[in-house]
Image (cartoon, rainbow, N blue to C red; front, side):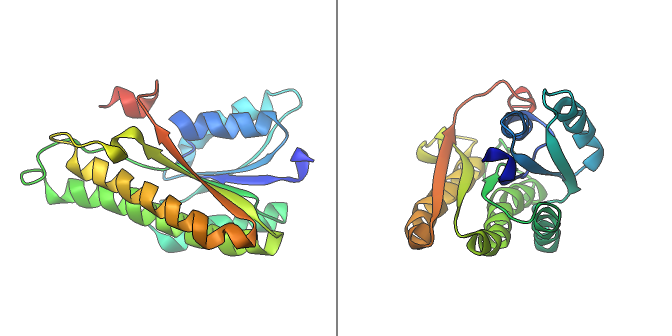
Length: 196
């Protein structure tokens, strides 16, 4: 039954993560939702509580750049709900500009979020899924993972990494009952898109 199933979603304070959290909650899933700024998750808990029947959402502060924080979020979700069935590794940021002239701090922030963040999320979630007997990892990538365009090199490369990891993980984990989906998202009506 869906009410016994648990999903952890990173970057759930807005956009795709927020919508996914509400969609799972509306279907009776128990949701662990993370964001860097926990106050941005209050709207999610209010929206979930307004569902009929009300959705159950555990909000957790975690910056995916911080391996220990992501592990603590997974541990908190399992402690509260007893299991983890699905990971939606959604947290990500964009960066547009010349690869050679952009501020290194901007590029590093993008790489630590879009690459390290996915690795931290997967490495924290898989042991919990193994204890459950299987699961599903959904990695949010982008259509630009397969594109070449000026001034998007860092972002495109980070998403190419995500898609490559998804393909490898799918093969590595299939015998353990853990499936992997690589979602190639295009332009979407979100806060992320508005900031482009």
